[in-house]
Length: 424
Image (cartoon, rainbow, N blue to C red; front, side):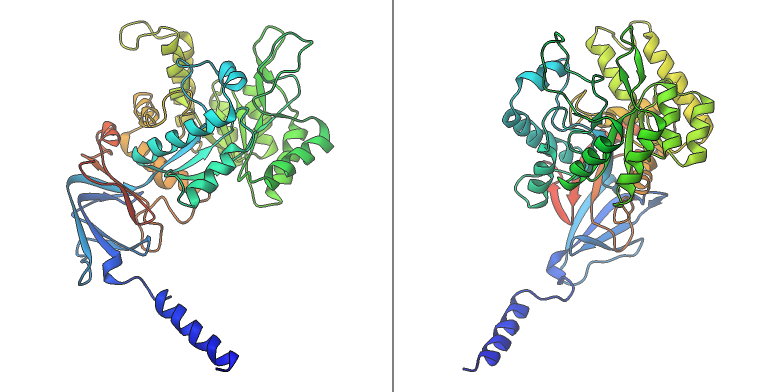
């Protein structure tokens, strides 16, 4: 047989085995909940048709084609897969093991094994996308974990990762006697040339975002103080954005927040000392706040505080005030709890506290779906809309009225595949 004829026949066989046409009816599933929150608005009596890993249709009169499957979800709200904006898959709660001891004494192998378990737990809790903001001493283990999830080796959310993150020399831990050079929880860099090199190195090794610590607890009395100048932060932003990436800044002090905002970062994490003026500046410059209210809450409980029994600690009271100021300012809010400080899978704690601190349940659910998708520039998810990824979660009840419904997960779908079935 002539070689060209053989090639033609081979191509025909391949195309028959792996058709490029749309998925067949057998590959479709019609989801029938009581209601659908599309990322913006609640719709009673809607159904959602999923085909080929994406949302094919959504509305009140959608039907599955002949041969397609139906999945009845009575009493539930179907909403876009939740998006966690601030996590650390390579950490576990500090009341189990302190941060210092995790960094110094837990091997990378152990931490990756924990990360695999954390990723699965997070996915089963309805979070189908996660921005992981630093491996805290575990190098680029997040890049490898992301690849393993993408290849189907282990289950987990779709990940955005930053690798080690960037800190100023001398500012970060672990710390010990000055004569010892202990491993650090992030990568040190200083000055123009080194910041450019480190930022490029991290992006080259797989970082989707660049994270910098604009301040940290390294003041003369151990208090938080800025660690990079505005010019240094702006340089990192310039280098990252030249590759289409964005910068996240850890900033708890007002000065650190102002410097980060003027430098042009995309998101500021924590923002504990933010006031109305600072948040208004962020809003004017298009910088979002990820308040991580659950992290401080969890840390205080580890120290013995009993919410609802003991008086609120000063740090909790100040966080309530700063969060109220943020809401009043109009700054964009990114949903993210700093999970890893507290248990993975307990991500909904952040949502519950955001409601307790002044947001409406509906606003929080929108923030954790379409809001995060917009701020993280993920145009293919975060809404129930034809053509988008079929990353969906069904919960018992209506989370726009009762935020606790986010904990009552009935079904999780990622890319059209049911990864948590009703009753499981």
